[in-house]
Length: 189
Image (cartoon, rainbow, N blue to C red):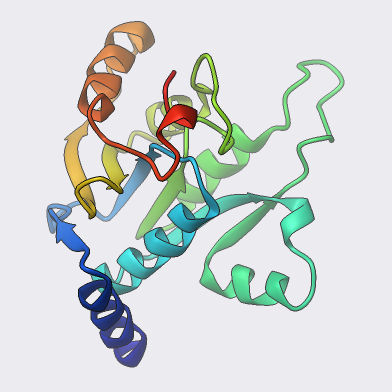
């Protein structure tokens, strides 16, 4: 992994990106909220960043992306396959909030990466799963970002869900207000 870390760091330097912030050393588990998410390149840079920071990560990815030969590599990197078409008959939900909450509760050290937009396309509102996972697992939300305009990728503030979603969401989105995605028109909510 040291070689992967070194290669990732060199690539960031070569491309002119700056790595910003750190997670406090005492935080072993968290939900990494990643925004804006407007391009597949976000995942590429995000994984490189996690290699540099040597984070124990897992991230959700649609089932359709887990084809061979990419599937086994993505799984090795931390991908969790999501079947977005399979819904619970009684709730209409996929059950991923509970699966990811349980995963966080069972691990000693895990950073779960979630893009609350849920897609690279423009959305009117964020999905709430990231918030409920952190709340139910009793872990912090770490506001992580990629800003193509400044060529910055990093960690911003950390907060624990208060249970008042709308209030917390205003604070969270205020942090992302001036972060620019690869395709800025897609990142506005």
